[in-house]
Image 1 (cartoon, rainbow, N blue to C red):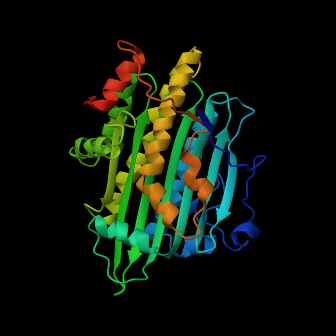
Image 2: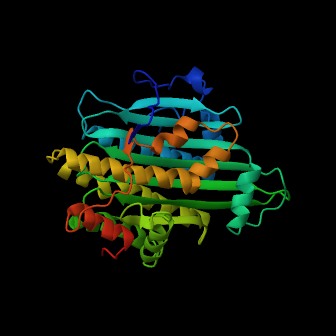
Length: 361
């Protein structure tokens, strides 16, 4: 069974950066420290607020994720057919905030590549409060104002020899009933190959480790283990991929130090992944290898819809943009009854690793 997941249906490439669309005026001239000229679209927050609150973590995080989005999209476009560019969709959320969703679909290199930025605020949904309390958050009050800014990306390549990558980096802030603010960061980067090339996996993990080591030598082993545990497809008893790093509720040092760590991790995405695209995007492949890629994508869909914390939060949030939440799903995925790879095959080798995660460096 092959399932085709519907595309975003956005039509031709669109870039909504005009001042009228974002509530900006000619008077809202940004200082050099808030340069937005390279972004894929106008930031979500009005320029007047960016200027007024330029030292606030909410603004710093929005500026970071907008830059990471632009840098990553252009790096991917360099590996794609020149005629294929990202569709840029700047959207608003009636309950507060909005985002910028960038998508390439049915390209030569990327069957579907999505890079989404969201900057939203409002009242925390009851189900989200319940989830946070279950993770140990001591939230005081019922109707709690929140702010969330994050970037999330999943890249599904056309060639089975190019791995899928996912990354997500986010900042969350909740104002409690007594006026006190709680904040934390979360995120991670992980790799899902269809065919195992150990040299590539070591490169990926080494790049992430370097980013972690800039801040604390204990971060990489801790967050690598957390990644292996989080991206477990429990009902299959196998990992979604070969891991990477994952962390949540990160508030181990000052807010500024935590931000710098997240920045280092986000900036490591391009050097960890794009070399693998360059290396394998023109590799020959068979129809059997394509079938295996689609089967593995089925597992990806299972994890995202059943277990992923970000997907659940998005679906619980009133006014959430479903197209952006489900952007991570591939265009095509496949399920076969009782499928099992033959012993001694590359597919069996990958499956063994997914059932028994290992240390790569």
